[in-house]
Image (cartoon, rainbow, N blue to C red; front, side, top):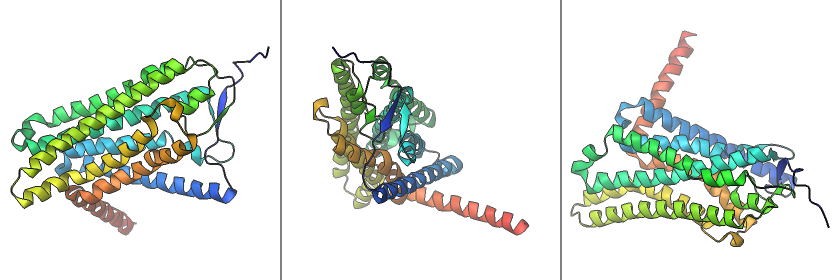
Length: 316
């Protein structure tokens, strides 16, 4: 009988995107460029929302929360693929990455649903909006979204810490996703996979349905409006958020709402690039390009910084 040593595996090796050297270098440049642009764009949005008094309203506070979240969401996964040479991670580090990856993803699902509800109140109940969505209420909802998102994957993460890993060490991914981790374990993971699959599916689908129900209510309300100007304003307000929702949920539903046995690692890696790398950059661009208040405040913020830098330069 072959005896398996279940204590030998202390780290995993990411396979990432294998291929020719020029392909790996190309992916490195693309990942690094998108990551830096994402950090810059989301940081600028946060500073603009915080520093501009005209943006101190619920919609932009939720936007600032989303931008802050995108920084942590992409930072939890992207730096590892940027490492050169053999990309390794300890077992405990892999589990920690899994937790932060899914907690930030869960928080984004909740924040997108909350932002849709905010737009629902603003368009469908404009007279009661200032009462129902006051700044203190907005801040409490934002805090609750973060707390709920970080609690959601806690149970599955605790269960993963009790798994035994006895080889192989190679993760067919560029980050510690749930399915690759389960495939590497030599423990019986059937119940754990079922629990993880159920929790992830319930979170994604419930937040998606809540988001779409808010937009369904908005559509019904807009159809009843007689003014074309009201139509234009309502759809313009929601267009950016709905675009983000479509991109984000389209990729994560494809990646996670499926039976565990149907997971395809090659397709999973490609799809993961979209919600881990691309959407954190696309989201702030969509928000700033589709939101007139944000564009105006952003130009004002850059003009102030330009004048400040000019004054420093002239004083020297």
